[in-house]
Length: 378
Image 1 (tube, rainbow, N blue to C red):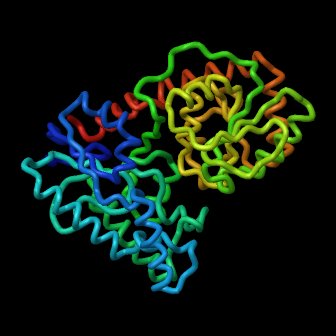
Image 2 (cartoon, helix red, strand yellow):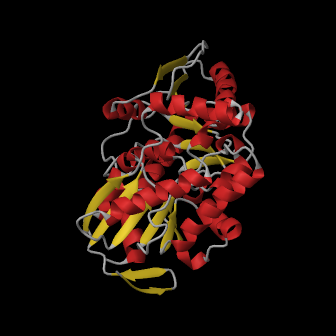
Image 3 (tube, one colour):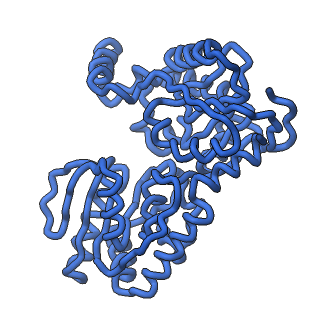
């Protein structure tokens, strides 16, 4: 039970943590859960998977658009609305109450709902973004028909953050949003970062000089795909042996030197791609954090990333030490930085090693778990 709350520390007798989230997010954050399990007992409780069962979701989204007479880009409104938020929260609350034990604390991932709506269940939250940030920097993620529906959702979010004992965020971008957009006490929010899909940092060898460039094209437009393709054609003129590998999804691209294997589901295959890569281009217009960047750094692959008010990863990067940070990337600028790194082996090697050190010392789940424990106690 919660004993006291002093400044930004929630002093608790935390013998058992219950982790709640969409099944997809529980799976993605298994390494964090494993790291926290070294401090206390744990269990997991998946909630209704709105990101699961794509065939059913597609049907429901189509029905939602038909019923509300909205365009397909508003389809996510069938599960992103205030009524759905409350219903999911109440359903999760009932599931927690029906357990044959009482968790000392609920650790809830993200904000499609919260673990306590009517009851007093102590919980903390871990966020990568807020709807206010999405509305400001990437409206495609905002599926509401009008401002009233958006305001209703924001009120639900506010209640969830206000009732939480503490809120952990991946970046200061999200912390600032909680303070400015939701009026949450700054002492109640701690920035802890995030890591990748690995339990321990990679400790093997890394070979450089392949001239292979990697781009995550899973969301091609948002992640800056057009910029990358245009930049690569300029790079190719100066470095004829350069190769661009685009993973994430199959695309209709026919450019000399570009390979597009599509989605990579095998961890060993993805590891091999990272180990064969000299540099990652990540000029996203909006990127809540960028776990792919951390995964690249884990294998000693420096990244060229975009810094803007909607992107979070640059909190943890050092320009020209472990990465290249650009505020307004253009094809010319991306090409210039890429050519400079691929031609300067000593600089590339130095940044590669610094990226690995950053992951080893900071951007790993064990370090992040320690930050959580320092706040909630154990």
